Image (cartoon, rainbow, N blue to C red; front, side, top):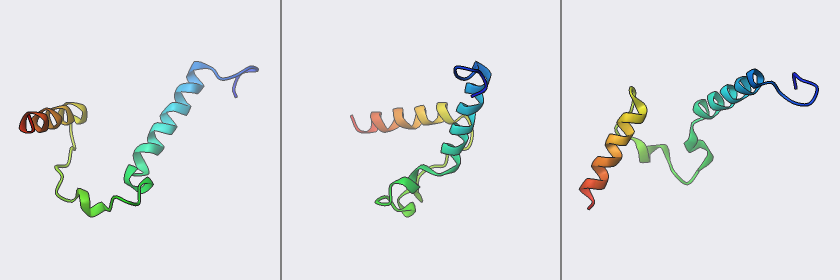
Amino acid sequence: MDLEFGYSPERMLLILRDRCQYLIEKDSTLNNPHIPASYFKDWEQITTNHAQHLRELVTETIQENT
């Protein structure tokens, strides 16, 4: 804690950034041993405009399956 009764907004932001970085770096599939890495080998990699690209892929998939 950086304040007597808790954390300052600045310190909370640092904690949140550290937590997000940790989650990004640890690779989400490591928490689920039932999904082998090979399952994802043919998936398209998203390397730029992550949110937009993911929305486009999801929209395409929904349209293909309706």
